[in-house]
Amino acid sequence: MQGQKIIIAGGTSGIGLATARLAVQQGAKVVITGRDADKAQQAAASMGQAAQGTAFDAADSSAVRTFFDGAGPFDHLVLALSGGKGAGAFTSVSEHDLREGFNGKFFLHWTLARVGLKTLNKTGSITFITAASARAGKPGTAGLAAINGAIQALVKPLAAELKPVRVNAVSPGIIETPWWNRPGQEEQFAALKRMAADTPAGRAGRPEEVAMAICFLIGNDFMTGAVIDCDGGIRVK
Image (cartoon, rainbow, N blue to C red):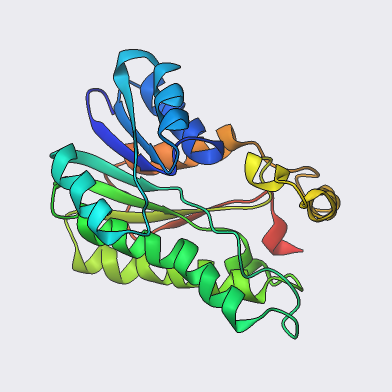
């Protein structure tokens, strides 16, 4: 990745931020994006001159086009935006929340990949970040499984359609990120910690561990159409 330019959407915290740091360590130049301009600039400043931060609303297609027009040509796109809706028992999740879940993750990934493709280097790559819910079969995650499964379903057809651009995904399990530490999420995070303790790995993952899988896909020119499970084995139980 030496000297290559990587755009990381959702790079101001968690997995996206860990990926940006690892990519910089491996010689890449990164552009970190998020909704909060201060967070984006602070994250970039912590990595020195190899990183820059910018803010826009990924749900605003006009803002997305403006961003990519201004960013210029680049080599790799990492889509690390996470949604917040769609979890819960099948009989209790509202249609509104499920639609919000798709709007807050699937359609953002779709739009960013589609618009970014125009200035993406044809020898580069797109990496989607999904979630283990797509294949783990855990009760209470049907909505999340639908959202993340839809993203994973893009990987193979896009790898064939967009070649020579490589298209892959990483599917994390329960990862200790700020997403779970929001007010009102304490009980849910505690339940997830208990679930993580019951996996073969015996614990929740760290953002840096997922970042290693992402950077592997970015840096390996022979990887396309692949989904890497980085989930501590949660899908096998």
